[in-house]
Image 1 (tube, rainbow, N blue to C red):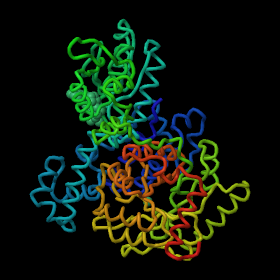
Image 2 (image 1 turned 90 degrees about the horizontal axis):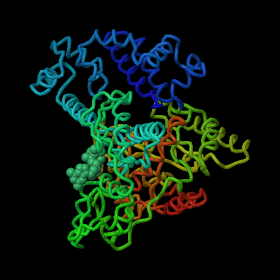
Image 3 (image 1 turned 180 degrees about the horizontal axis):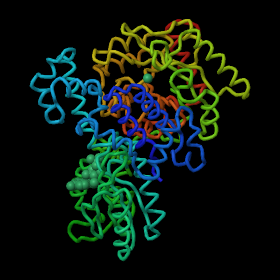
Length: 585
Ligand code: DGT
Ligand code: CA
Ligand code: CA
Ligand code: ZN
């Protein structure tokens, strides 16, 4: 079944915001905390319920646990329905947007008598809100931007979410419909774009089985509306995590599989270019196959390879199909040998309970050793200026180093590496001394403040520190929430190369930072990249998959990604930088 923790967490966040609006700080905090705990649970709450452990989750009181139970059983929380009636209806969707929030909305409601989204937008634009005490033009600009990003994010979901939904649907269809011969998710999800519009699923089956398949698909629990229902194509609206998604299902014959797969994977630009090439060769490509233009004779279509081969191309990995030079490369047999998930040997950015992670180092190690074939992980907790994240000062970091040494010693391994995610301060200096940084195996430096200013100089200065090995989430964007801060990435890439510093591809689903465009530029410039999950709990290690997708979409090969290498090689990278700067290795 589809994991419902996120749905629940979203409801609890809304409840927290409403309580805040109603000046009930105590309950607001309790629900906020519950939302975070549920988001971070490694397992679906229904499994906790089934095994009788729901009332034992740390930090969840019995009143909240009973609401979880109610939600699982009825799909609703009565208390939430009651609370919603106590604030203006339109505020429910706005109340947790960046720049809005319960306090802001409350003042707008009380001081201007505004209670609808329409009036609110009008007041943002005509200066009424700007004139409220403590608001001003900057705040209003941020609110309008927040609203705009929210409207966009409603239309597209994150790749990670699309993959979870797709896999859930594919499993349901496969399990219940033995008539299905082949099934694949196509469209932008198969190309692993960072955000996804609608979901496209392709299957093959015998003609007589088409209708029963469509009957099953259009009557799934999650379907809220059937847009089109036919024997070849159906489109429905499904509801996941409170968001509406369109899902298209198309049925083809087995002999058409490759052509349909190719056509519906897209992208549109890639397909257009491919068909131009076919035309020059006197061929015609459509979703049913490749045909001779004059005689209509079918010459390919059962496999995707056959479609590409028919026009003289190598098979092209879906991640590259954006018409950005991949067709030319396939023609010359020069496609890059893209990095794969199985090449990854470890994770270089992991948080533990020493800062804001959910699990102890010991638990993280046990989990990773059990579930992944990694050779190492690096614990990189936050440094001291991240107060809300319980960032480490020099003394606590030294304590953490001791604990790591002990864990390694007891296991007779050298699996856990000592690291830090050190804050880059406003002037580009770091938040911990070189003395202590020099004792670490790996240092990630990140910007976590002053998102409005140009951060180029700050990041460059950090890269000039001999102990900094990677820049974490280099552009600071949060998809659908916060744009990248101003930063000259070309300059950053240049200095990364000169100093021997790696750039991070942060695999957190809403970060995907750096993006595919900058990955490709870094690869072209010969800058080393790392793919890191920035894990704050054990469930996050799985994000590596989408990090690898971004790398692949940026044409990265195994040799471009440092964490495809053994620790010995990574140490060489670290030592080379220290030598270059003339400090002790
Ligand atoms: P999305 O849904 O906005 O994230 O992006 P896609 O790429 O999944 O786009 P979608 O769902 O409209 O169509 C899926 C694929 O089907 C698309 O990548 C290429 C193919 N396709 C759909 N409609 C057309 C069309 O009118 N012309 C061409 N050439 N291809 C199409
Ligand atoms: Ca699509
Ligand atoms: Ca579609
Ligand atoms: Zn960070």
